[in-house]
Image (tube, rainbow, N blue to C red; front, side):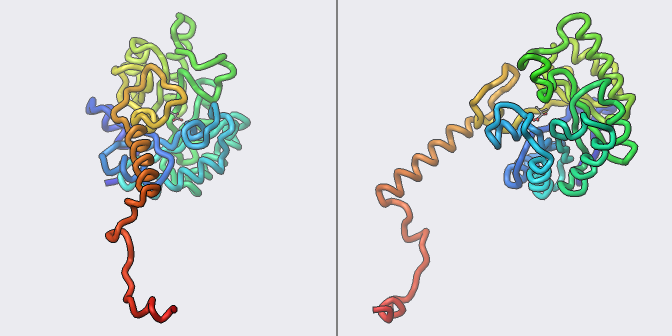
Length: 275
Ligand code: KIV
């Protein structure tokens, strides 16, 4: 059965952990979906993982729609959430609603995610008022990397922890159905999780969140440009792929691939008539 935002609300009520992974293409989405994940996030991390940018700032609406639609076609049961890219919602409430609508209509997302706290609450309210579920994202918000001065743990000082708590309450009040906590101390994330009615999804925020999210290429060991402390490798797929690519190159070079089992037959007399 297709999972929805109601699945998220029920999981919080029943103290069941939620699972989320990113995906950016049809085949990976199908694999993750068939493993039984609750939600697939088409993160703007596709800028790093798929497109090779050093941050997420260059990702466009067209990128998110193209990859989001591919994931939506592969996800039969998982809730599909698509990130709103940099400058698709910060500019105005109007832009936010129009662009969230495009992700629903053209990518067939079931929800959108956007970064920020109090300052984006008018956008969260307007998008949810339009019938589009919003996941908020606070703590380390990669679209603000230049304002932060780098990828740093957030919420450590008293003022920063208070701001984090205020932001969490504000996005809930604005109508977000869930909120991602990125790179904040575990005790802070746990405290705020217990104060919220909506489920929190942590990445680098410890085990006290209501669920967890990871970038699939990180947890499979496929992306090595940088590896944050919170990433656990659940597989060495990068190595498996490299070994397979090398074996293919070797077999083509030495003539052991393809063999008769990989080729198509034709009657000899057809060939003879070519002479
Ligand atoms: O873009 C992304 O993949 C994300 C996750 C890291 C939460 O926002």
